[in-house]
Length: 579
Image (tube, rainbow, N blue to C red; front, side, top):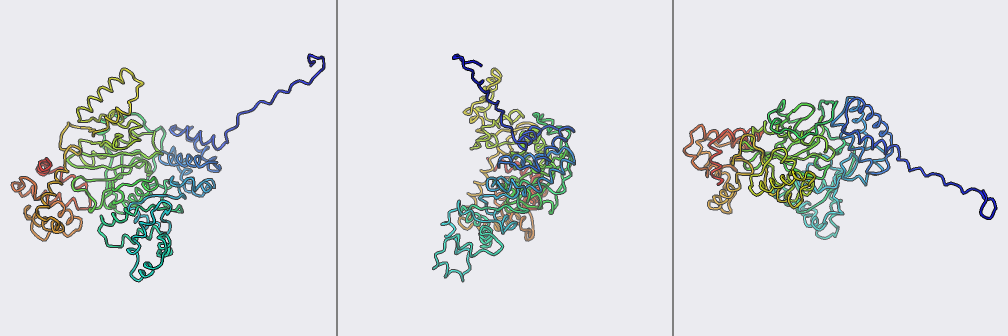
């Protein structure tokens, strides 16, 4: 081609076209697998198996990608298409800790709850003792996050007297002392938890001493440790899915009329497995729940709702039960896999419920699971009113609930406040949304809406329910009574009041021998002595009150709820005492 000067020049080369960088195949497979998460049917199941087989051999580059695969496997285990997929998922999860990419990113995946990774956790006293019993050689003190000076102060309590000359003279730091004092097959964290438990302190004193140490622990990852990877109730019969989980907003009134299939006692052996499963579900997510920490394996109830959905209600040991309400922790199980948890309090034909879905299982069927949970709980406790406290709605510092607009979830199901100011604000906001459908409720408005309880009334509003009845007033009257009679000698109050209460009810004999029942009588006795109008009750009504107290300390606290709620005079007397 001639130039302006007439000299021929070579044509200007055209630069090669740059192709966009290709996404690595394993990452494409992972992304496609996520897109199929809520798609079911033969074609989806076949493609899911293909993708999982490819990913079982893949080497994922980042910790985030390893975590994504793990979460998808957990979801597939809870919602399997068919037996072939479930077998593949079980095999991949069983070997997940041996994956080269998991081992390479093990440190970055700490506290994820994935098998083989470490868990850093500020165990409460009971859970620390439980972990020390289960995995003693792997429970260590996290010295980077623990104030060693606090531990130095209690070293003499952990030692035998023959060790005190060395403790007095040799200036080892707490870390060195505990490394020297612990046994050959236990970590220093297990030693600390075990020794404190052996000091013969009362339960409350032991918890106070341990928790004021503020000791963080590391539960090292290893074979057969607690993990979300292997979390499943053994023996759960799988139910396979042909359609996606129901994500529609439920008709709560209709759901509450559809009671679950069966309600059965789990038995001590299954109860123990469920208690361990619940505790592992907590520590692998950095959470704690008193109902699980103080769980009683004898008081576990399984509510089978069909379709692979089971609710496991876990009661507490008699020593840790509340004075009045019965409290149960619960696990939500899909095909034996824990997908959520919470706590329920029951009394006066009413329940108060806290509800949580684990992050891996959100976005699938939250409304359906909540409705079926309420159907289970209202049937077990014969309740006609459900109370939800502000924290669940996004109040009391629950920023996540406020951000997601949890209050509207309950409002759309039919829950309502009993506060006139909140109701006016709700009606005003609803009118604004009707005019401007795209409007999102402002945080300032939500903060006002979540300031009070909301209620779902199956029959009609009443005041003698959890959240309305001021049972704290009963406790205050008991304080005044005991102060006047016993002052600082409160250790005398339980046995003395129990003898008087039994006499007032016309009971003879030495009283109960069973430890839990005896404790229940000592706790309830001052209330019995304060109950208005008791002397006018019939012999049968007094005997029924005695049975209520026996049940409070018995094996199953749900029996206490049934007996209490069936005693109208006791309910009215306690209501009057609460005024």
